[in-house]
Image (cartoon, rainbow, N blue to C red; front, side, top):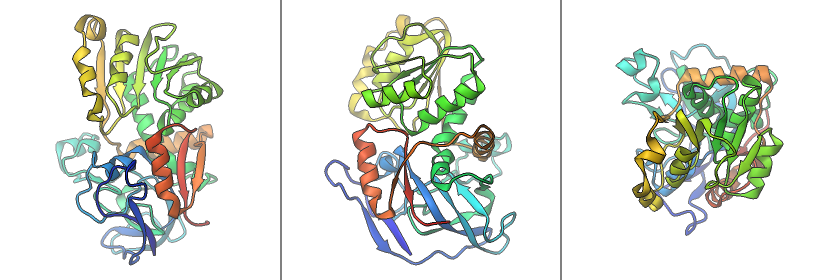
Length: 344
């Protein structure tokens, strides 16, 4: 099978083609696994973090990709609940121990033995992939594979952010950064919290215009002050400085939810200007989000199907994965980037 393979870590701006298109053996499904013929796989900021070494794979070579929609081709011994021909999705959570206190309390995203698809086991930048049958999800009937792929991570992690934010309909909500995840979050907010106004902070004019198109009440630059204080802010940026600006925009008793698996160290000095009185006082909260649970994915797929939420996407061929990654690295664009790998 053909796959885009990562053999080490690279600076994307120096090495524009870190992934190699190789012919590798098609995996055989092991105990409890299924073999999936990949139809589409979203390209995520976390994939870029893996390439540049901020999120390190456990070993090389590795096939990235964790926003996968495909068709079950074959089941290994003990695999349950899925049949050949079923359309399924695979997200970032590819496994967990199932025995620790976190797994037992529904917080498998915090499991010490968390297995990440495309980081700890080969992912979906390939024509086929094997996945644990306990960690894949049926795709609701009628959903388009390409527009559904980003829901498996960008959408699911955005859904988790909204759940953890404590939003009440009518609250003012801020979104900092407006990429693949935030553009799905605003669609979710407009449906579930119609009385809430959404304020978007983004680097580029194109993203700010996109936010207005999707129903934002206001959009401005990352460093701007919102027209009013915000009850909740969700930060999806990969850097530190927006955290300080978000705290300045947060209302007393408000909560900042940080949706990032890593923050770049290039602007770590920004935190030296943290001022307790203006940034943290008056019971402001900061909440980080780690990974997703299976429930986050299944719940969001159900909500998205019911509300007809789908991603705005730019399509690429499998061999163009490096182009998609470089475009994420440079920033800009509308919505999500997806590799269209096979026809249904």
